[in-house]
Image 1 (tube, protein in one colour):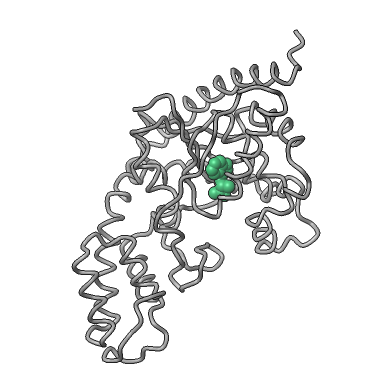
Image 2 (image 1 turned 90 degrees about the horizontal axis):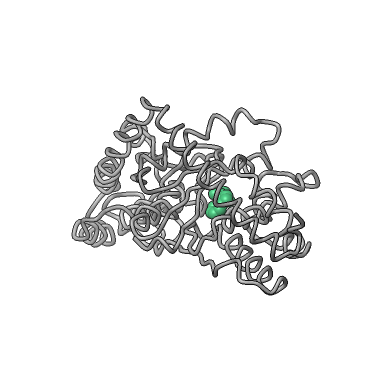
Length: 334
Ligand code: TRP
């Protein structure tokens, strides 16, 4: 393992993780965990920026989010899991970084803009929510991460962290922060089961990593295919067809996928068969994840311990970093 280089990524503890998370970021985490020192943040402070009045929801999802990560195969013996709010250095860094980011830069962030619209905030958007990318830069830079594996919706956040790191080094004439880069999925974003570009709970178009076989079957049966195709004997469209997009993302049997596509295009296979094969693939994919989830569900104390140990470790890393930061900023008075 290249212990010199670090990965940081994670999510807000607001709900269960789904196949979109897997494709966008989890798969890369699993791949990279053996190569680089990996840190997973449970971003509760960020979750509170739009759930400040519902702390119980955030609290309840701390373990759920962590278990989702463990269930897909992140190894707690080599990966550090920690809780954002318990690392005070992140809050300190956020304060210092605010001066390095302009107002208009924050307001320009396309992901934040989209979220504000989607959440229907209008004029009442909390300032903390608008500013969360700055604290996300602090999440990334508190461990001086080199690589951030995330879905492409998080690209603007990674770019902000890059800007902040460079501007800090330049402004204070130092070399405290490393160059940080995003690491994105080569599949891109997984669309929803209804063909919508974004998978989200509110749209009801997600398949969760924790879905049972029964729920999975139901969701696949309702999945959108080619809307213009009425009979199985009609030639169908493969491109943009959600069922085939999922086959491409998860079915490792290339021959089967190629055969299904070929027959679909000429009207020689029905949706039923394409869906049944997709069910087999996804059910097989989810089975070991369910098993691991089950284990951690029954051993929640272990999960709490993992978080406790990891948080203590990052707290220490953060304190050491803050010393360097304060020295560079000439605020190391005593
Ligand atoms: N914004 C991310 C999300 O909504 C969560 C997150 C918080 C994050 N801090 C991070 C992701 C740092 C990568 C790096 O899923």
